[in-house]
Length: 470
Image 1 (cartoon, helix red, strand yellow):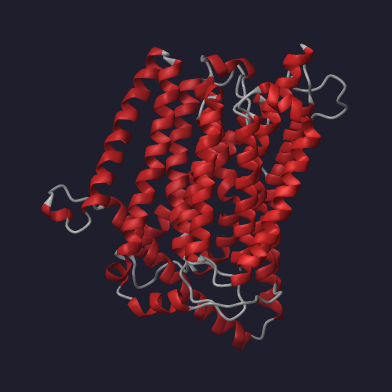
Image 2 (tube, helix red, strand yellow):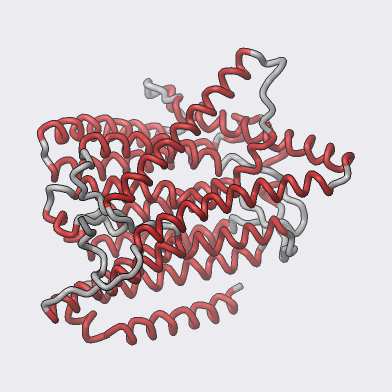
């Protein structure tokens, strides 16, 4: 059976192309990383290599200590009011979100058992938002108490006062710049998708026909951002692949932790963990957004928005997809993946060398969490609340802009400037989307040319104003 979402005149299956690009990109990243470090190990002087290994082992041990402190802070919740002193707000909010998590899980189980589609959708949204909010509150408390948890106040004092004006064009910095560009495109794709969907929906309503322009644009965006827009057949393949990857991560962490705890005198060497950080940062949004898209698509089945059988990213309308099983696995996989990946990418607090692009872990934590809230807003909020969804996106992106200007999360000022400019461009796009998607007639009167002109003029003005400000 052919996919109804594909164009009839297409010579190649775009879902197959996008799937191949997705897996080939991941394979290329993994192979390229391995080849780079193998080549560097061969050409580096043995004494220098030994010193690098010693330094790396020390940095990774600090990362593991921070990771352990985060998990310890996450799970230790006082029950008595007196024990919450002096962090009453954090502890109270934590318990509120925990109760919301428990209630949403119970409601979700009942809704899946009784096939209550709308209730399942609301409980899924509640669970994901509560989980993200809980982890954000616990992380904020961790950073407040970090000195007391790690007993390394001098280290964090140096981190808070270190600042560089320029960066070097080293291989590491080029990789970091590449990751920044990809993250910018990934975040920008959310309001762009919303705008494209609204634009082509309005045109179809006016012409009483169908247009494949939205599918083509989504396909191009999927290639660039690694956010896939797959048919049901390839959704199943990628879903089980991602669930397997997250399961393997949990298994490896459990085995290493258990072995090192049982044999502390002969632990497993973990210096290689540092080399996984760029991969984790690059694949953070694609992995977690795919799970959010899966939850959005599955929870949409049986509701008013199920006619297009799409969450904007995925299509899961195959008869072979068992909604209760896939939705339950999606929730479990997202919980494990979100907690582990977020804690991992925010635990590396190494003091950078001069000219190196590096970030404060607190800044990474806030921006990663807000990026996830932005994806949740665009994917899990119903299409019937498109205008409210756009307003929420404005609030989220505006908070990212203010945070980046106020805290300067990167140690290099040039990167802070361009990152602020990127967030402002996303904010401008989200503002245009909010204004134009309020009424279909307004969007049609403006047209594609008008929208592109408004976006371009805004980007130029923002660039000029930020250059003056900085």
